[in-house]
Image 1 (tube, rainbow, N blue to C red):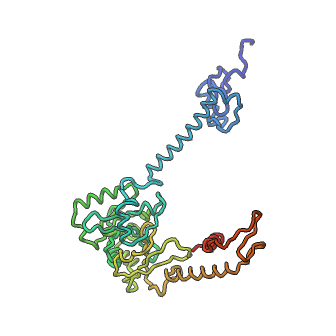
Image 2: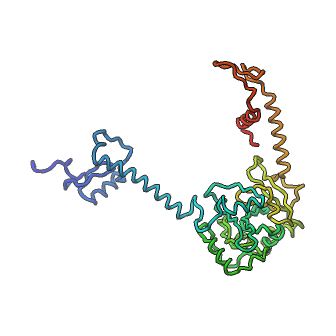
Length: 382
């Protein structure tokens, strides 16, 4: 009996053999892997050391303490690297590398300035920035191929590409009369090499650019209506397959010219303080380049299609002229309100402010800067 070891000196699971292993999570001592597995099941222990657990100071300056800290930091770095790899593989927060988008200092920017269009850039990685495929045509003429977002009267949206030399009426006519693809349906994502396919098609058909009004469409799955179809050099309206399965249904749903006799086009004004959608009336027989002159677009133009003229817009819409007039009136009202504000106690009206160090003149301060600070404090957007 005297030669038998104590239970505390044996494996805490089987109580037969001396322990060889210590659990990193709870420091339980076991003799083998099966005993360690049974310990995890019984104690619901994950076997991972808690990095926030208190460690005595004398144990920090040891090899084990240094190893614990190193493994903890290395684990954080491995987690960050894994997230970065996943983001690159799934194209989250990154622009498709296969498509070379024009830079800010390239000929594309010069061409945009010549066209008189002001582009408000979206943050890199956002869906609108990734969907933008606006570019300069590689064929003769070097005209712009715009990515265009079309909003139908039923709020259905379509992304496509449209040459700046095509009139809106022609583009819309092709949009509503072109039947969807009859067979294969596939989901287009950022991983599709649209630039490579476009380049190959350019080499195979050098005279295709002469057909300015031809608009090609590519079906997109109904579950992902925001992705654009395969880019076409001149025309640009990829239809959304599944939502409108037949040509008759497509025409009956969106061909406003057949329903009310005429379709009206409006450019959606971005970044407004109004709770209504602000629209700029466009002329149907004008080319896209003319419609976009001296206009601001958010990455690419958004065109609203309605059956009502500008004089009788639905209540959820507002004309650009009415919006500007409303902003002007609000600015005048704010100016009158600020003029009625009484000076603070202790502040003389003659333009001098008394301080501990002496008298300071405020006559040289800019009134516009003071008014701008007050506007920001009041939370009013102009």
